[in-house]
Length: 192
Image (cartoon, rainbow, N blue to C red; front, side, top):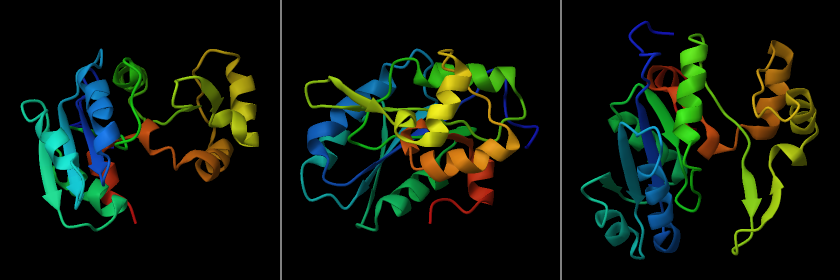
């Protein structure tokens, strides 16, 4: 971990890749703007959308940076956003998802408590169009259920070395719950 990373006041660059998500993009962007811990920057990467996604992103032009690229896929869009990010930490959000208002604050508090963190991730919820809860991601997987029991409702789980492998196998795809130092992300080569 680089010493230059601020642990007292972490700066998050939130990267939102977009491909034909005009109907859900405004909600995703608004959920970042309304965070109780302000994002350092919001980067929307339009991955060659053919719908009105670009127009929706441009409605937030005073609060987001919009990058356009020919369609290259979601991983390429995330990597493009990460390349242009200036925040110390990267956070990711897909255009059809949204953050709870305290998402960045929760991660900032963990970073302040544990300077050795190399990434943070967590649970997320599956919801119907009407907003009603279907399930949480961790509850669907054996390793996640075990960690939830271990946490005892505290919403805070610290993984031991052996648990990390099981967690990553089940949950590392929960992109919108991931925060990682920008330098670490680049050292690992970004998304494949």
